[in-house]
Length: 266
Image: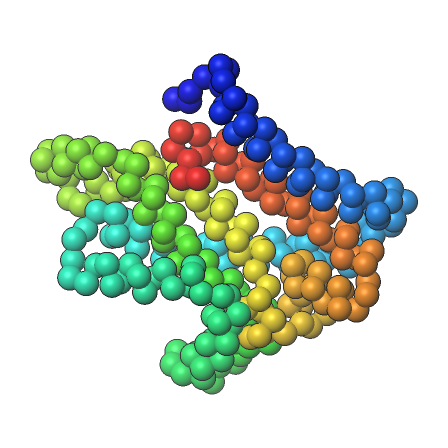
């Protein structure tokens, strides 16, 4: 429950600082939109190039987020509930992709993709993971899996453990307690976290720059396409795609706040 904002200069200063940050962000967006102009906005937004990159960004982020959830939910639950040897060491290693530059992750992926199981997948199934959409998915997954595990841990931490203890005392096995008690109670937090992970996957480009590279219409998701168009001096495309990315981010944050509610991990 928040404090009352009236009465004194300190609340006014804090709220005013928040308002100034909001004003700067609004100025950044509107100034770029004014720079682009209404006519050019309609022109770039009507081009198939824009929406090909948009949908490439959406579906790759969705698939990589699904894989991240498959790993992140049990890992987050383990870090939240279980005590095991070297737990803090495991947690520190899992958090590495969060604190190191995504470019470092992209560089290290060069080595791992020449080893099992990636070489086996390439040899027997003809699926080469590198400068293609499979490489995009691998980079997005590698960058977001640890982020997902950390957010899921925060969601499970909000659920009092006494509910699981009651379920176990009534004879329910741990896996049944997890699916019947914990997951329903953590549902909103998990969905809100999933949206954040999706947005993070959609915003990735540093790792892609090193590991994947750009192929027109195949690997250039929107953040990466912005970087490439900037280098090419195509400022109309840069501004218009930046506006789309901002709208995607605002939509994701709004959905996270609405769905997460009081269980919001942010």
